[in-house]
Amino acid sequence: MNQLPMLYPKNYLARRVFAFPGSAFRIEVDGQLRFYVRQKPFKLKEEITVFADEACTTPALGIQARSVLDFGATYDITDKLTGENLGAGRRQGLKSLFQDAWDILGPSGEVIGSMKEDRMLFAILRRFFSNLIPQQFVLRIGDRQVGTFRQRFNPFRLSYDVEMGEGLDPRVGVAMMVLVLAIEGRQN
Image 1: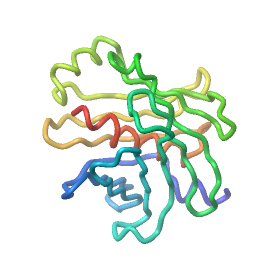
Image 2: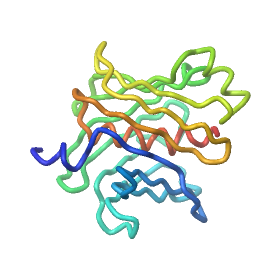
Image 3: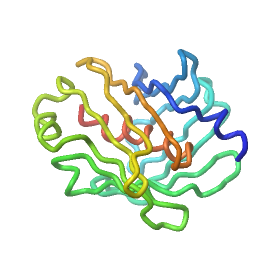
Image 4: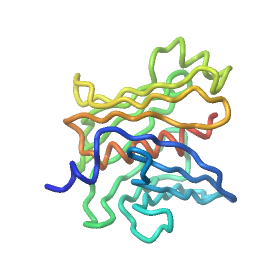
């Protein structure tokens, strides 16, 4: 755990890149690849591996849906190097129709925080105008803000500037970033 701050810095650029078939995401720090995800198309039960390299030879994190239905699904997060259960992200199904919202669960399943899309008005307008109104997510542990994901304005390419602070396991923060790209990104 002592090397986590070095492996997981506070600022990232997370973006979708062209891949056929399926989707791919690059998570970079100062222009250097830190994590890579290649999402397989047509999977009934979502299973995502976050790799430390573009060749997909060094797995870092695993994200596994508990159910087939995506509407209010829970995604378990594990450290692929140690096998450690890190917690989960649970999409708040009905609330996410109007404003994307997630619960962040600890390793034993208790709610420890949340990730929520910015203001309700912008969230509703975004449902109609897609990428013309950039999205922002705020991560909270209790009442304390521990991170933000700010979408860059670009109607053709999904990308986020990410800032992470103290108070959330950085591996869980990276996994939540991947869930925003993979799950919420499907709406764009």
